[in-house]
Each structure stands twice: as structure tokens, then as C-alpha cells.
Image 1 (cartoon, one colour):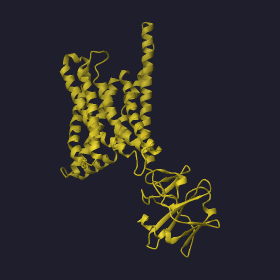
Image 2 (cartoon, helix red, strand yellow):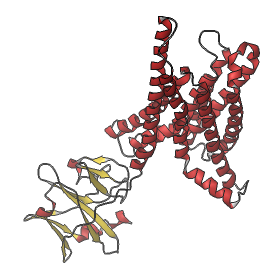
Image 3 (cartoon, one colour):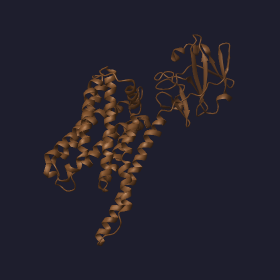
Image 4 (cartoon, helix red, strand yellow):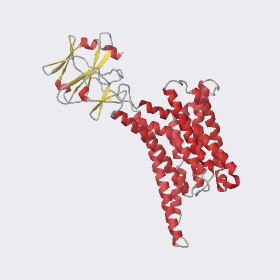
Length: 423
């Protein structure tokens, strides 16, 4: 669930921020007197999303096997449109202040913004959409708790990105237009850097361009810090957030009449709320994309193997050693030289679950214990304790053993026959 959440959040957030930022910068004001071209930005989102879904479907079906074939021209469009949108934002104030005087110019600005949104969405979202294809792991039935958790992580990741962007949008009415403009320009600059990094990577891999050593090292650094760029994209809006808080405290609750006083009080409240909630959203996203990602990248270390008696082709483990209800791991070297692992755990009801530290689906990745659950290291699936010792799914591969006089007795010939699971 957490992996789905942070992956979808990282992929969706830049698109959501770009849409909201351009919406704020190119809005002409309140009321119905607005240009029809304002709807083009929404059309850009829909076209880009539809294209991303189609592209993801073609990749999932292996109809398109080389992403570069599509990404290369798309990234050229992204880079050029990023530059064009940067210029538009610089002049957005003039374009929207008296838009009737230059309605054609505003229409062109909305068209460019719509194209930029479309290609950015098309480039960013296919990898996000493809996450839908791994809700159900191989061997699982469709409706399982793990599938629902993955789906929930996907939905929460997309929702967090959208909500964070909408919270940032609340600062549009806090009289912090210059600060919001600076933040939007920085956002577009970071998007340009991200798109140019992806484009340069293709140019380098296809040997179209050979970068000098210093430029190549800078490219490698940028590739390895793509997530940091996404975090920076949301943190730049701390500029208008702080400005909004300052305005909230700076404006006096005074006026020539009671109506003015109420208006000033309402403005102070909105400005403080917009700034404070925007900072909360930025902190939340930053924590998710740092601490949350770190949690998904933790390397699980299997517990070391325990000692047991091995004599004359017979492995013996006493009940006293494994009767605590926790996972116990043992190691055995097969006749063909393969190092094998097997596990023993006392199940509810007093029976023992015995099997290889490997399964048919995930190979010899092994199992670990967490919060009283036995979990497959590779696919992160919790194993039903009652099914350990039975074949199927992600269960440990079972093998024959005997219980004699308070001991588990295993013939090593049985283990020798199963060594292929660890090769």
C-alpha cells in the first residue's frame, strides 16, 4: 500500500500543481465575463490523461515495447512548451488585467497552457496508470485484502496530490499575486529541468549527443534526484504561503464603516488559513516523499539460522527450541553443495508448520516475522499461519517430517531432493 501511495503521489503531483498554478495565473477574475478559451486548459488535462491511459494500455499489452519511441518526441514538446509557458506566466498579469483589450493574446496563452498541460500529463501518468496492473499478484485471487490495500494506496496517492494542489490554489485570493507568480515560475523551471533530464538521458543513451564529463556527471545527479525535484515543486509554494500569513497579520481589522471592518476580518482569516494549510500540505507531501519512500526501500534482513542436531542423515529439532510461536530458520547444505534454508513455527492449536524458506511463486527470497505475521520478503504478502505446511500460493514449500518424543525429525534425503528451489 505504501509503495503504491508514494509512487502515485510522486507521479501525479507535478501535473496537479501545473494545472492549478496555470489556472490561477490565467484566470481573469470573478463573474461570468470570461474568455471561452479558459476551458481549453481542462481539455488539455482530459486529452493528456486519455493519451496516457491508451499509452499505458499498449505498453501493458506489449504492443509498444520501447517507450523511447513515444517519449522522445513527447519530451521535445515538453521542453519547448515549458519555455513558452514560462514566458506566458511572466506576462500573465498584463494578459488578464484587461483581457478584452487583447483577447486574442489571452486565447493564445490559454492554448499554449493547454498544450503544455496535455503533454506533461501524457508524459507523467503512464507509469502511474500501469500501477493498476499490479493490484493482483500472480497466484492471488482477485478480491483479497492485499489487493484492496494496493488499490487504496493508489487512490490515496492520487487524492493527496490533487488535494495538496487545491490547497495551494486557496492562496489565489490572498493578495499575494507576485509571490504566487514567483512560485509558479520556479515550478515551471523545475518541470523544465525534469523534462530536460529525461530528454538528455535519451540523447545520451541513443548516442545522439555526447556530453562532456562534467555535464554527464550533472545529468547523473539529476537522474538520481528526480524525487527531490518533485519535493521542490511543492516547496516553492512556501513563498506565497509565507506571504499570505504575513498579509493575514499585517492587514488591520479597521475601516471607515462596519462593513469594511468585517471585510478586513474575513480577509485576515482567509489569508491565515490559506497560508497555514498550504504549509501543512507541503510538510505532509515532503514527509510522504522522504520518510515514506525510505520505509519502502528498507532492506529486510533475514534472521540468522539457528543450530540443530544433524547426525547420520537425520536432522533433529527439539520442541523446546521452537515452541514459542515465532519463526525459526535453519540452514542445511545439500549433497550437491547447495545451501538450503527451512523454517519451523508453532501454529495455533499446537501443530507445527514446517517448510522450505522458499515458495513456488517467489523462489528463495525467504520469509520474515513482523508484528506476529509471517511475510514473504519478495512480494510482501502475509502468509496465513494455518496454511504453513501446505502447498499452494506463496506458502513455504512443504516437505515430509516426523514428530518423535518431543522432537521434529527430518530425513536429509528429503531436503536433498528439494535443493533446486535454492539454485
